[in-house]
Image (cartoon, rainbow, N blue to C red; front, top):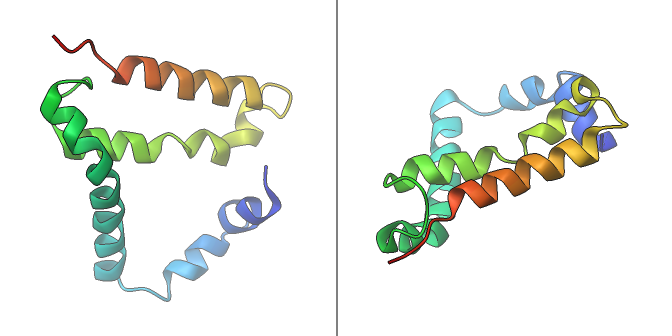
Amino acid sequence: MNPLVRQLIVSDELDRLREYRTPEERVAERAEEVETIRVFIDPFVELGAVHGGDSELVARAVGAVPYPTLHEDDIGADHHPEVRDFVIETFARGLATEVE
């Protein structure tokens, strides 16, 4: 796992960083992240080119794809790259649909 990510996630540094922002600020930040992803996702949802008709749900799912990186120790360092790539590839394959 990346040393910075390890320090932020594993050693509770992220919780300390969260203390500097109010819950409202964190909600606003998450909403901004979803909207940023939706800029790219919405046209594909409108075309029916991705699985699911709810662009917010799709955007939140896309935003969750990096989470396996946070669990490298749980997955096992020897298997992590293969598992991470498999999750990303499987997600990407399942996200796209045939446009008629």
